[in-house]
Amino acid sequence: MTESLDRTRLAAWRAYIEASQRLFTQLEEDLRADSALSFADYHVLVLLSEAPGQRLRMGELASRLVFSPSRLTYQISSMQRRGLVARESCPQDGRGSEAVLTAAGLLTLRDAAPHHLNSVRTNLMDDLDDAEVACLTRIFERLGRRLRAERDASTTHPHS
Amino acid sequence: MTESLDRTRLAAWRAYIEASQRLFTQLEEDLRADSALSFADYHVLVLLSEAPGQRLRMGELASRLVFSPSRLTYQISSMQRRGLVARESCPQDGRGSEAVLTAAGLLTLRDAAPHHLNSVRTNLMDDLDDAEVACLTRIFERLGRRLRAERDASTTHPHS
Image 1: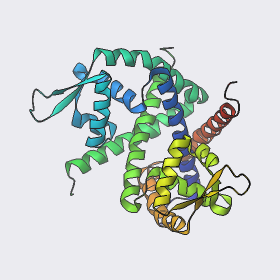
Image 2: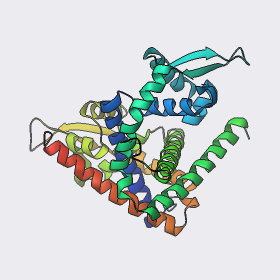
Image 3: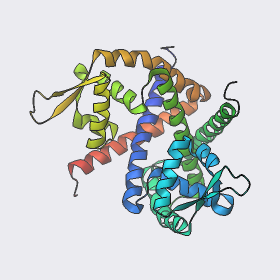
Image 4: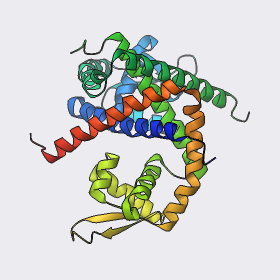
């Protein structure tokens, strides 16, 4: 198992993990400075803004964010205190609850998005040619699809 | 500024950020389950194991990890309590201090590495062909180099 990654793939992995962590740190610093939002705040706002009725069940949101239930509760409570989201019980299911985007949350996202996308452009995208953009899309769309499918299978059949 | 990313690049960015966050969550879960280490623990062990004398100044380590000084202090204190690293004052500089890999830290890394690299292989690398590996390396080596240079320039001349 020690030989499980050849030198070329180990170098690719290290370049990818190191540059990505550096990039995400830089983008989050920019986001906090421009809009007083964390990466997770921003991601929640985007997911809710795109959902039907701008609301998602907590379980669905946890699965989309790959957050544990306790981490999601903490995240949503923090956003609730800042007025960005509200929490409501599900109409269809008395036990479940939903996160709902507030108007203030939508306005915050609309203010933040151009700054954030500008920061993505200057820190990452301006430096990639079209072939590299296509390659990035192909690799990570396929990876995301596979990881989602694997996780859904393991949460549906946790003991299989 | 709202038009700062065209549709193709926005799709590439979203595929990359979403799949990467999903991947890093999965790899960290595997690392915790196999070796009781966080991603940050593992990264510190790798950096120290590769440094001359298996030691690095705290400032250098913070810069390599892109951690704030307070986050690094917290991280190293936690690893010190588990016996993975020790902290010593720098011989050349009475005010500075260094993190030093302990024998227990080295053995922990040697036990963890094959599991972790196996998890990188099965979750990411097995699914990439050689051209995709080359593309990943090219994009992220260049990005890492640029981000390091920009950050070094901004910490050396914070007001320029």
